[in-house]
Amino acid sequence: MSFLKIPIINLILFFHIIPVLGFSQVKNKKIDSLLQQSISLARSNFIKGVEVAESALQASLKSNDKLAVAESFRAIGINYHNANKRDSAISYFLKSLDIYSKLDDSKGVAKVYNNLGNSYKYFNNEKALYFFRKTIEIAKKQSLDNLIGSSHLSMGTILTKNKEYKAASFEYYKALSIFKKINDEKGLLLSLQNIGTNQYYSGEVKEAESNLIQAYNLAKKNDYKNTLSSINLILAAVSISKKNYKSAQEHINEGREIAKQLYDEKLVYDFTLMAFELEKKQGNYKTALENLELVHSRDSIYYNENVSNILSLHEEQQKSLEKEQEYKLQLEKREKHTIVMFFAVIVAALCIAVIVILNKSKRKAERNNIRLQKLNEEISVQKENLNKMNLKLEDIIAERTKDLISKNQKLSEYSSHLSHQIRGPVATLKGLIMLAEDELINEREYIKQMKKCVDDIDAQIMDINIALHDASRKGLNKEDK
Image 1 (tube, rainbow, N blue to C red):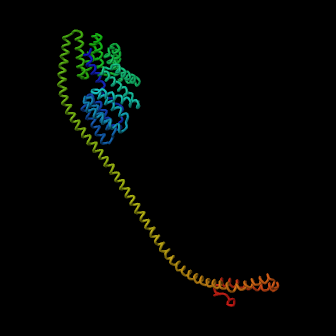
Image 2: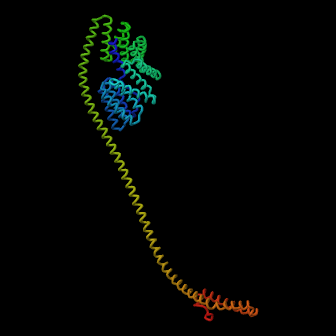
Image 3: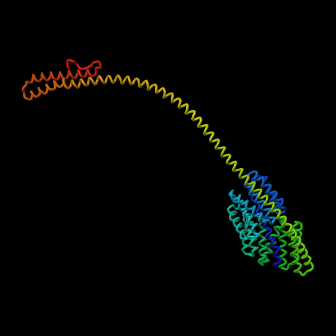
């Protein structure tokens, strides 16, 4: 039983090395066409596929389309992945992931995580499972059911490889449920095939055969020859374990014929090994030995081819590294060019701003000069007017000074007049009052003398008033004096 598992486990892994290719977001039709062509060449002619992807990368760099650059790196990674150059594939996937992350493109990030998971599952199961879980986490938010289903299938493959059959079945049935929901027959086919293979390893031969037959019918219906051939190989192993040698022979014959049509030497080799096991079980040792010799012969050829492939892969990796360095230099040049252009635009904008400011300042200065000239003229006129006003004021002051001198003289005379002329009648009045109080004067004489004093005072006041308001008069009446 353990011998039969060798080709089958290799087969179940093989059918998940092709990463999910959908969800193209590249808007440039020419670049998108190149990328699709590159991906379609990934399994048949990876060298040509890489060349086409590099052409897409050059066009993407030229047009500064970052999304197309990310997808070009991913396409190159897919081609290297299918050529079993995992290190180179991971390197390009990480470049793609870096760009998609910077663009905040969740779909792109999910696709690349799926690619990384498929590459890492050949040598680091923990990392592979991590990337598939991340893919599912992001894909659920974006409702990318196909990507979710594919990731569950890949996780199941890793768990089968680790002989964790129950956990693997859990992942396979999740994938089956998703593919049923979206009616993806290819996904259904792969899910049933892997569930059947996993059940075969778990010893559930009857259940395995049931699921594998369903997968076989779907492959027949859709003419998936490669998948049909691999299912025949597993069914042959199931039939041998059930000792149904006739059915096993039919599956070997059909599967080997399809493998020959597809020029798939690896599958032909696996069927030859299965045929050896069948003949050995039936006791046909001669035929079994012939098949074993074919296997041994093919092993020798594989060894020589592998040595040759290792050398050619080394050369291609060297070329890839050189191209990678070239891409880095181109990216650096473009980044520098972009930075230079950015600063050139800023400097030009600043220069224009300075010119505009200077021009405005010049115009403002000219307007200010004109205003200053007008103000100077106005000030000159006002100065002349002030000079004239000053002269007039001097004349007015001189006149007013003379008038004040005259009035002061009059006031001085008035003061003297009050002291001497008016005080006399007042003293007389006081004397009359005293005489009246002492009843030394009769009333008639008292009134007569009082009237005379009052008239005298009134005459003096009237004269003073006239003298003060009459500028022509030099002083009071002489006779009063």
